[in-house]
Image 1 (tube, rainbow, N blue to C red):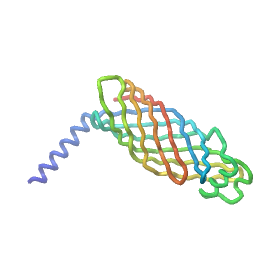
Image 2: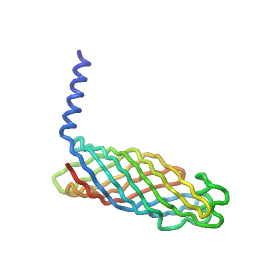
Image 3: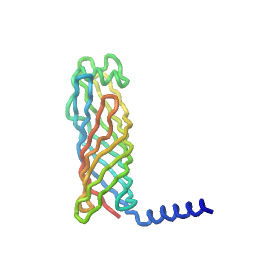
Image 4: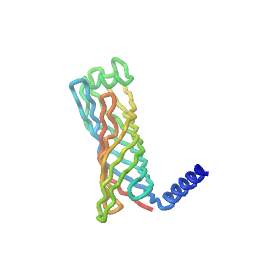
Length: 191
């Protein structure tokens, strides 16, 4: 009987939280920095990105948010040494660079975050994000190309302004010498 009572109360809590949940859809734009460390050398590239997001607000303090992002190619080139390391480390051939620099051709990201908010009576609501992040990076090395995937723990912080706008910074991956950070400004539509 005790287990039935606990199950009943759990279901009641779950459905009452879902009934009061707020939902939102959003679109954002920003920049992402891709930092590649090559031993003692480190090189950065910057990409523009568009992010679609959807979320459910469980209560005033907790939300779940899913994000899908698409990034452009990078603005800068990695030098010849970086090209050889990138292409050879991530599946390319020995002569793919052939003295050429490497380009970051594109970036795709997917993420699922738990968002912890600090509600207050002002029009600014700060929040923290923690969760799973997946990124796919495409590189071109002159004579060849390759891609790599980074799955990592993601985290960040942001501020919601008047329920319609969000400014966010995210650490989306730090694996195999590649670190990805992004900053986005988002328009969200609550319903």
